[in-house]
Length: 354
Image (cartoon, rainbow, N blue to C red; front, side):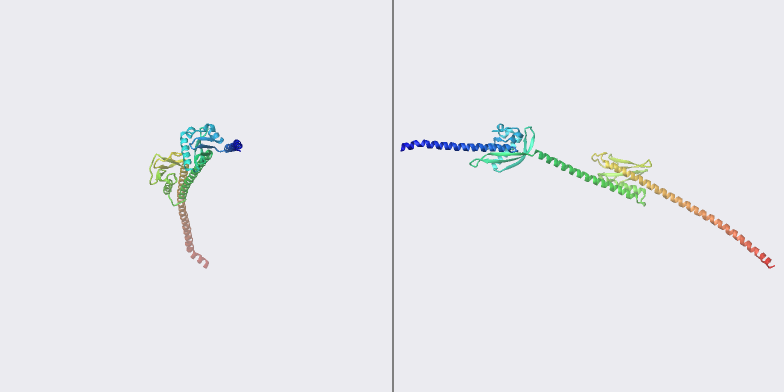
């Protein structure tokens, strides 16, 4: 019986061995299927994926990683970051790898990678560790999303926002400047409609309205020279920064409007003055010309009115004198006639009595 039992043991061990081999083959097949699935999955994923061991050596990467970086899994396998990337990038990657393996927490950060063309591309990295059967860090898996186009779009958006902000500020400033100019012209027009204001007072009023209408009113002074008369602001001082316009009336130069900056200001269209201020000073010169013309017309009308009154008064006196002389003559003739009548009455009465 013992001999029979001894003969059966090798057969039992062989069967167990065959079963173990079959089990291991089954596990190997499952591992191959799992590996193939993982490789297919990684290949299908459109974002670059890489994985490293606990020493920071690359274990592999997917197709998307290869397409962007230009490095195949075989070329990168077993290498560390300093062997693959530029030193300034590699040091950042290395420090972040150490950080995620120390903290055992999911890691996300924004940085750059150098693509196969040598161009730095903005990316967002995501990394996490994987553990062995004992719970120790066995390596890490990482991926990155290319956000270069998004960053460019954000930059363009920021540039557009900055441009729109600058444009808005420019428009606001231009509106403010135009309001100042309109206030100046309105004030000048209002002065022109005050008949009780003399020409000298009118010109001085215009001179005082000029500085607030210019870009830098605090350092602006003005002067109007008109037919030899000089009207100026209290802070007037001649400087190299001057803008002027002649005053023309009936094709005759009768003076000029001058604006000075008391200190040097940034260059614009005409020295430190802008194009709108050139239009404004020309408009002021025209207003002054019209005011002079109006005052001259008023003086002429006054003079003609006085002459007309004088002539009318003389004519009245002449008519009165002529009328007086004629009435006096008529009264004298009537007196003579009456005296003659009274003298002849007695003779007439006597003749009738007879």
